[in-house]
Every structure is written in structure tokens, then in C-alpha cells.
Length: 483
Image (cartoon, rainbow, N blue to C red; front, side):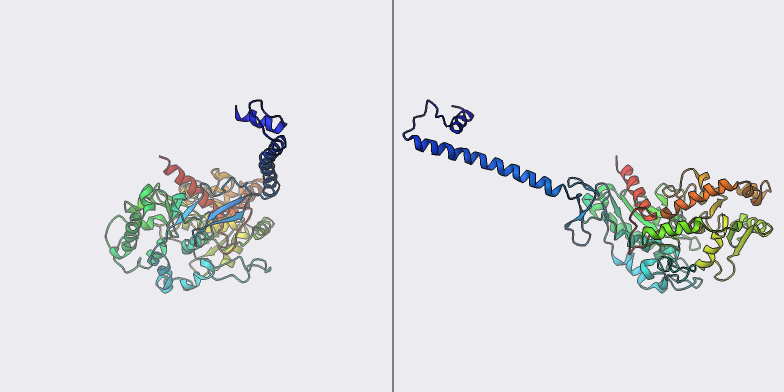
């Protein structure tokens, strides 16, 4: 007899014809007992199912995080349901480099200090690399905890400190979509740029790639999923000869190094370098500080049509500079000029920000290189940048600035300016008031994405320069490792 038929007969209290029971009461008792045994697990199952639904559905999801320090799995409240992992495709593994590649570089901070620096690089290392705080940017005390005298070369330290707080770090490199190399390339090079031979300048980079090449994380993709940061321009790491008089190191010309993506303040022509913003003086600790600053610059009175902060360069280095300064000084008070050849004139963040906040347009010509930190200071001030070379911004910061550069900036051909085909006054006066307002609003919208938030805090509803850089590198590495 089939099992389900037998069960049916027992539960109905009807014995099958093929089974003889010696005792009817015993049969009835057995039948009831059998039904209870079958029924109880079914009820228990449905009770547990309902309990799971009522209790866990009220929890908005738990996202697991592979702790950097312990390697254990920790759960944090998230916005996803319990079956989803918000870090999927975003895990980053940080190489635990020997200290000589980072900590030892900044330990003796006097070695990375030059006589021309405004103050010791030891002070620049304060506040997680943000530098000493600025006490009074304006009459309000609102910004005293968000503004710092930040040295542009500290980007490597600032970024590393942000990476330590990244939401999706993992100790399991097999889970990682990218691998961060916390090498202080620019600061290390700064120790040996002057008065040292090329062997000394190259030594650290050679040692680094040799160390990386021995690691299983490297062997998996030959380093194409690795990235590092530089607070110097890419050209400083591409010395092509071994002449002592030649500038920089050969780090980015090493075969292994060419596989690594370098995020740098200015790219060259290498496909493996990507530009990210220079650090500004503003490092907000929360969203409120960003919104308040945006509102402040939005309402700012701007008596000058344009301004320029800089100094003359030799005709061989930057011939456009002299022309810009001459036109600014001859502009009949339309232009406000800050001469950076005067000691500390442009090193004072308060002076510099005041200059930009008083102007509708800010001129950003090339200097020692194509890009300038001043570009991001002007955007932070709500001042519309004016460029004279596409390489000063348009071909550089593709993850942080809009592709349509006409929305937030003005372009003037340096060649046309030099030969007298156009003038700065003439070009900028042609921009209507309505166009100025629309462009300024675009500039103000860019502010969150061009500042690096305080590493000791976090922004909640907006992506800063660090967040956009991480988004960009993850997308880039996904493409590089696809094949």
C-alpha cells in the first residue's frame, strides 16, 4: 500500500481492509498520535516563517563589512535587504607596505621641507595632513573648524587617511575589485629632488615595484587593478635619461609601474595616469558646512569683472603670463591683480579667497605646468574660471568636471591673445549678466566634488573629490580587468 494512502486512512480513523487490528482502542489511539506527530512540525514551521517575516522585515538590511583590522565579518545597518551586499563590486584591499614607503617618509618631516616653504612640512602634516587650522576666514566662526592651510603636496597623506575610513575595505584580497598602494610617491621624491643623483631618486620606486611583484595580489592581474596617489604632477616621475641635471625620477617608466593607475594632480600623455583635484583649503566635516558655504558665495558681492593671482614667468616658460598681467593692470579697475612674487602674498588663504570671492571671473593661465591649484580655489569661491589652454582643465579632470566646459568656464586662446586678436576685457564683457549667473550656479554646484572632506568626519548626502575618484577608479579597473 502506498504511504499517502496509509496516512489518509489513519487520519480518517478508518483502518485499511488489509490490516487487522487486535485492539480497536489501541488502533484509534495510534491513529490520533500519528496525526499529532505529523501536524505539529507543520504548525511549528509556519510559526517560524511568520516570526521571520514580522521581525526581520522591519530591519532595513544588514550590510557586511570585512574589517580591515580584524579580518572578521562585521554587520552594519544599511538600506538594502538582507540578501544584498552594498559593497559588491566596491571592495578595496590596501597593501600593508613596509614603513619606508610611507610612514618613514614623513617621520623625519624636516627632510621634505624646503627653504622656500612658508613653514615646515611638519606643520603641514597636522590634522591628518590638512595642515594647521585657519582661525578666521571671515567674521563668522562657522568655518574655523573646516578651513586649513593645506599644502598641495599633502594629497598623498590626505587620500591615505580617507582610504582608511572607506566603507568597503576588505582584508580578503580575493574579494577586492581594486588594490590601493599607499606609497607616498611625491613626498618620497621631494627628499631627493635637489642635490642627489638619479640612482637615489629612483631607488624607492624600484624597491616598491619589486615588493609588489612578489605579492599574490599583483600576480592575479599583473598590477592592472592597483592604484596609487601622487601629490606631484605626472611628469615628475617620467625622467627619460640618467643625467643628474634631468628632473624627477623614472618611477612611472618602470615596466611594472606602467600597469598601475596613478591618480595625480596633473596628467601627462600616459593612458595610466588620471588627474584628480588639487586639495583646497576647505575640508568640510559635514554636509551643512558645504551647503552654508555654497549659499555664502552665491550671495557674494563681486565688484571686479576678473582677477588674477600669480607672477610673471620667463618668456620661455609661460609667455602668456606677462600679457595677462599687462592687460589686467591696464583694465581700468575691471581687474584685481595679486602679485605672487611678493613674499607670502598668495600663500595666505584668507587673502587669496577674498580676491576670488570679489571677482566674477578668475584667470587661470599655465605656469610651471599646465594646471594650477588656483583653479580649484576659484571654483570654491564661486568664481568662473577662465582657461587659456585645454590641458589646464578640460583634458585633465574628467571625473570631476563637466564634459561641456562652456557650462562652467570661459576659454580664450593664448595664441589669439598674444597676437592681439582678442583681449580679456573684450571677451569677458561679452558675457551677459544672465549667462554669468547661470555659469556661476554651475560652478557653485561643482564645489562638493572638488573638495576633500575632513578624513576625521564624513559627508552623508554628497560625493566629494575622494568619492568621485574612488567611483572613477573602480569603473576604470573593471574595464581594465574585464578581459
